[in-house]
Length: 173
Image (cartoon, rainbow, N blue to C red; front, side, top):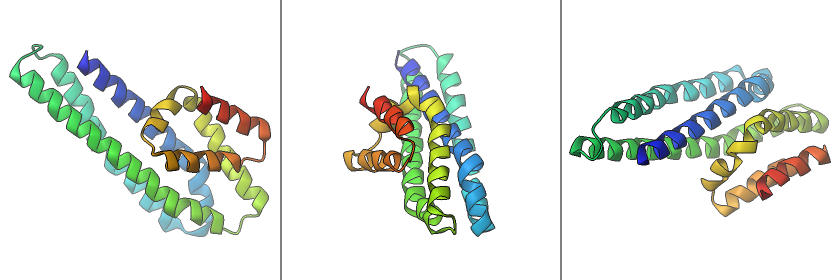
């Protein structure tokens, strides 16, 4: 049972990270690349750095799955898996925090008009909406209340009130 819980947690985290990376590659990086090509390169390197850790966790889940339940090796494997998964979750949260502090202000500082900046944020929300319908609770669980409110503030930047209402409804569910 516990291994299934770790597997589900890993799958949700992986899906959230993939969605995040795709949203950046499709929407954020092209905007930043116009301002400074080095920013995108550094951000892509950051994403690539997580791949070996994610693959290692996946392999741990497979290995533990074939072990005899209840043996010392099984329990040790679960403990190590738990530690690695928590570390990856912490790293992802730090990554998101770092980008919020550094990348979002860079978008704000670009020479885009206010309308263009709003469109960039709306494109980000459209990209996130595809999986947020089932990942939003998982995402919000990892946030402090103040961080969740910052997320809601970002959603409120959207000029399309129907889109904003839709995202807020997902949070309320």
